[in-house]
Amino acid sequence: MTQSKPSPSTASSIRPPSLAREHRWLIAELRAMAANFSQIYFVPSAGIGALLLAVLALADLPAAVTGVAASAIASACAIVLRLPDALRRAGLLGYNGALTGIAFGTLWEPDVTFAAWLAICVGLTVLATALLARYRLPALTGPFVAAMILTWTLQPWLELTPRAGTPACDASTPAFVFCSVGQVVFIAPLALGLLTWYVVALFTPRATLWALVASAAIWAGFSALATVWPSMATQAGGVGVNAFLAALGLGVFGRHPTVRLIGGALAAVICVVLGGWLESWDWPYFTLPFNLAVWAVLGISAKPRRAAAA
Image (cartoon, rainbow, N blue to C red; front, side, top):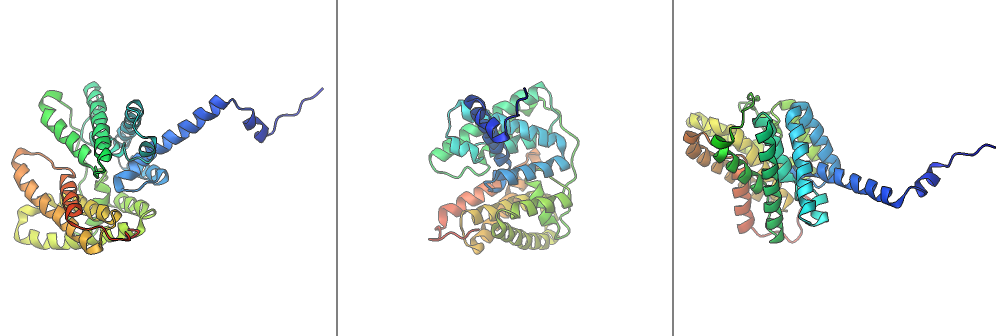
């Protein structure tokens, strides 16, 4: 006597309920980890996050690996702390942790101290992000900046081993603005920066386009001023990253294009001021100017009744 095989639909119907729940939970958590990467650019999409991770892996595989590890740690911390599932799965609790992991993988060689300190820093970013979300304050990349400043302060005791430097963006051509988009996640090659911009633009085309326009205008003004004050040229990388993020973030928050340009310009000015102040100490400011500029502009500008779709 022969027995017919169950159809796929029948097989799925007899799958143990616990196994089906575990499968759905795993898929949801993997999507949440991917969303951690997209939220660095204010995009709530697991698909865009996966594409950004792929571009990062092409540019710097070790940084992508530590970014994924940090994203997983952030999700685990949020689960252990019983933070809201909706925030975690949208990537809103883990994107600072993912960015911290990318930065660690870019700047230092992995070892036991590296892994332990990264886990601590990621946990702190999750706590800080959740606390700010509780009071409805935009975290932006503030927790990431705080974790990196703390790491830089403790570097004499941590003794993390620096990695070989990666190529920087060439600020002498307008293509610098595309390179700056990739530099947000420490991607230096121009082609991959352009690809990063395209991936982000798939979800928020208007906000990303306006951010690029603002960055190009700020680059032109910065380049003109750098001919008069050559010392400003050392801040070009920071200006590109922070100006783009400020314009993009203000667009996502529904501010007028003029306000976005003002926010980007303010971030550029803060870069120059902070860079001159911290240069003698050899301290980076990461995305602190972007945070300060956006917090300031959000605090003094009124939100329009109907926010633009960015």
